[in-house]
Amino acid sequence: MKLKLAKPKMKPIIFFAIGILLIVCAVLVYTHPWQGKETVAWDVTLVGADGQQKVLTYDQIKAMPAYTGSWWDFLLRRVL
Image 1: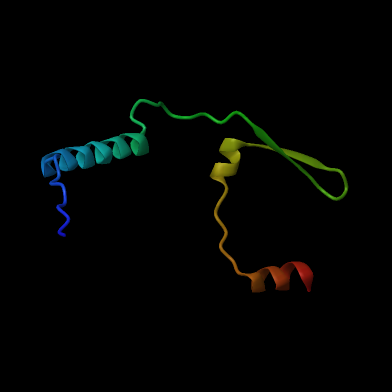
Image 2: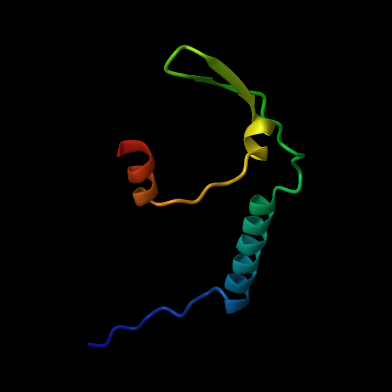
């Protein structure tokens, strides 16, 4: 006894259209064209060992230079 498989009723063009629609939606969600520039309204308070406090804004933190180091730098400068 042979089993007959049903032929697909959907045409390949429908799958192609759904795929294109999903790609367009993903691009729209990723780029957020409907949202403006996000503002961050918070401050960071740093407290030293002697109780001295320093308040930094988000813009001040972004303006700080980047530092790239390794665990060896940390070990030599902080621990030893």
